[in-house]
Image 1 (spheres, rainbow, N blue to C red):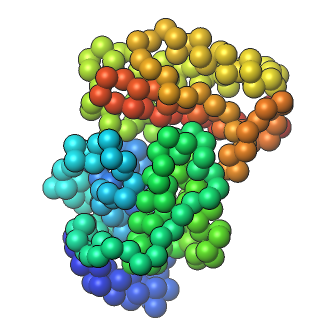
Image 2 (cartoon, helix red, strand yellow; image 1 turned 180 degrees about the horizontal axis):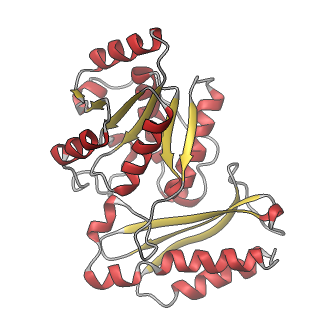
Length: 284
């Protein structure tokens, strides 16, 4: 595995593989790998000739009161894990290289961002699509692997690819979970011992909602009430519990049908965790 810090060198390497008709699988990350990240890399390795991963904590997607400075980082550990998996290139650009000066143009998301996490994180997804547009133009990936734990982000990035005719396929990978159901996240390290014990309730509440839908419930009010009642049992602040069509993220007000996303966000003392479940209501 080669560790690359230069944007120009990474571009040259990827161009050479493109000219050799080798497929490139790309996993963009902010590092501090957990098993969810590794699952994305494994999928990329199965389906492509070359695997590139990037580690870059993108300042543009953090708000003024968010955890950019304290976001967990351990590049050497990440490098070792990627090497063990047989990743070909570990792209680790600096902030100065990615943003050497103020941008002359800005990408602004106008769809799929005024709900869920995007509603309270103004500009967050603008930062996400900006950094990914840059990374896509550095790596030239055939396939980009993203976890469905952040289903809104997957939907937004799919919109970026569709809108700008970017020749890559977004491959969404199911959320990887701990044995007790908690979605794997770099921010789980912020949980206290007691919070870690009750955190699996997030997924349990979603499972109960799914069970209701599978039994024929189509009223979103009843499904949301079930999730809220479950979360009321834990000592945490529920940020949101919502249901949308997926991937359009249009509100489901009257009847659940088609592909639906049930998503939630919960704030613990030092961590804000998200989780979701996607259900094909028409097939149940």
